[in-house]
Image 1 (cartoon, rainbow over the protein chains, first blue to last red):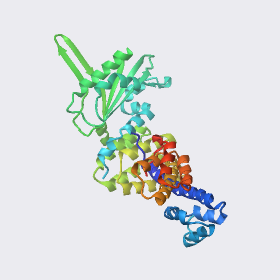
Image 2 (image 1 turned 45 degrees about the horizontal axis):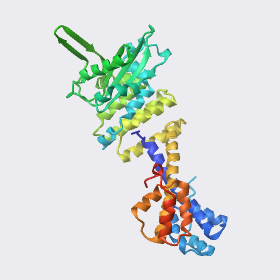
Image 3 (image 1 turned 30 degrees about the vertical axis):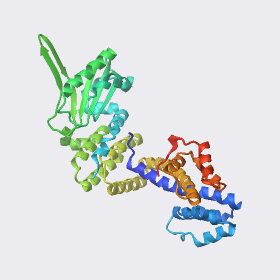
Image 4 (image 1 turned 60 degrees about the vertical axis):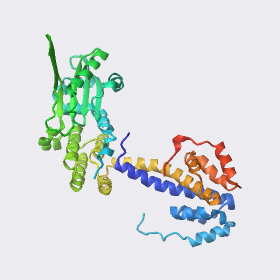
Length: 88
Length: 328
């Protein structure tokens, strides 16, 4: 068995978290478009910026959203955290 | 503390480091032999052949063998057997078995053989070096060259100054043994050795090869390993030598691919459970083993599913492929 260095393992973990969030977000957007047609730019940005737990919550209520305004309401209830000025 | 059994699962780092720096290994441990070999003529690994002829007579459970064809400066062609033993084999008739290896190589290649043994074990007094028999007028005296890694503990300053990668390998090995029960000392010593890689002027290829070995042999408990990784990446940043950081980047790329799949599969499973309640383990396993695009297709198809039977039918048309399964 090939040894995987600790730094590479750390990279894999980081990548998995990022990829998992990105994969969920993109798929959810696809499902939302399927349901509601093209989405507002702002809504797309909002979904892409949600953390994984929120994406999962959105995925769970997807069937109960029947109109674009249901989606808007849901997004309003799940605002993004204020941008951190220290982050780059 | 580091789990010794877990580490024993991979002896490949010893093999990797010998592959990478074979000539340096000979120069470091057996300098007079090194001086007689015509390195400019190149050398050839014959490891596959070796496996065939020694499959039934493995020398040690934790051992690495390199069989290499080289030429002497005199023009003579010969085989070099380099055997590294990680654990002492006091209980076995080690020297006899070295002789058996030696003879099989001679017989197979019909060429002279030089045998070198590196003893990386912890028993100061285990020093096999010869095999002999004398019966009814038939005498055999077989001697081979050995290097005992423990012996280098007295030559630390010399190792510290050396530009040979194997000086670092030996330092790392001895450090791993010395600090086995002292995690803080282990972290400090590992970091010092690592930083010296950059100061000694090793090339990028050498630094990465040695780092991989160091990281494996001086293994740390999880929290200290994270401290070490942070120290190392900060140092590379500061020195503008992003050697090891490139390994992390490769990890991130690999991880992102796995993560995308996990994200998609996770969403697919949530959608289905939302619709049809808890799913069978077999169905979940099937979905996890779908290729990425199909897992996406499924999630879209779910929107039109009316009953669990639709899912079963869909899965029958999309068989799982074992190679792409990713565990969460």
